[in-house]
Image 1 (cartoon, rainbow, N blue to C red):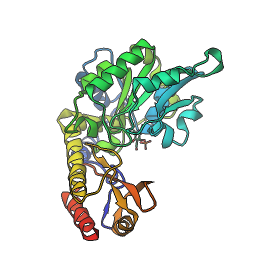
Image 2 (cartoon, helix red, strand yellow):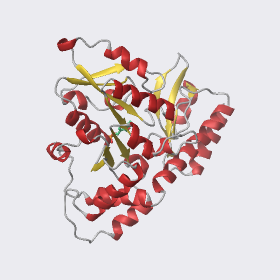
Image 3 (cartoon, rainbow, N blue to C red):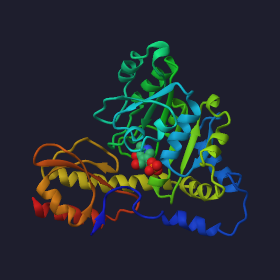
Image 4 (tube, helix red, strand yellow):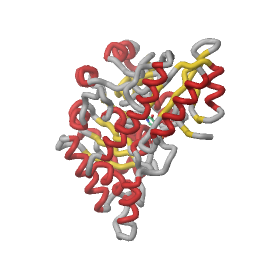
Length: 342
Ligand SMILES: Cc1ncc(COP(=O)(O)O)c(C=O)c1O
């Protein structure tokens, strides 16, 4: 096997992060997020989010962030509205439903949620006979590699506030989103327009970890208790603090996203030049070219990637994902091999 384009966590962690972990390895610190690294990383993130009221918490993974956020905020009879492509609906083994909350899905071809779709779900609410829609879950970048522009986020935010819905943005792939050539959003925008969001480290060069930012003070109540009860409050919280400090002390978070995006977009450009189309148009590190099944079979001999879905009897969309660690030579080899098969 030559290269693995299955996801953005095929390698360990960025060398700068590993260096930081080594540097502070022998320092003695308090546990459960009371270490100086977690405190500094939280303060740094808060500074970038530019919301005095925000609170920052670190957890180890995306599913854990999603289920803890959703279950801590919603009352037992409340539901969350999300796209039918959303990670919480498709790829979390029912983790959200296992906390007792229904996910109300909207059909989405580009992975995004729009106010009109939310309204359709609100129309289904029948007082005491149905679950009460209370939260809207979106992701940026989405599970199909697309991103929200400012107008879309502002419209969602205004709609949610008007309807008393909580807006939650899953940022497992935020590094790629904010580093996209078409991105219009900042961390400060997320601090202003969402009630809660998280910043993914796992897909941005950390060994593991996500930083949850709760902007709405009403939702911060006892959040540490929710984390602890769900096994999400790590005794060695320092591991997360050190990594996020390394990610945000300089520009690493954005540099990592930019490199990953550049590699995927280089592939997309060459694939498009060969005459192939794509399932979705993306500017991030996930691309979904539609290729003849015969060519896919050939590529599978040398490369790992997911077949996303069949498009017709002879062709399928595949998902290619690049990361901070993708070497340009891997991209060039893939393109050359693909050329050889066409
Ligand atoms: C939008 C989104 N949320 C969350 C996750 C991560 O979940 P976990 O770290 O539990 O695998 C992913 C990973 O693919 C994702 O794409």
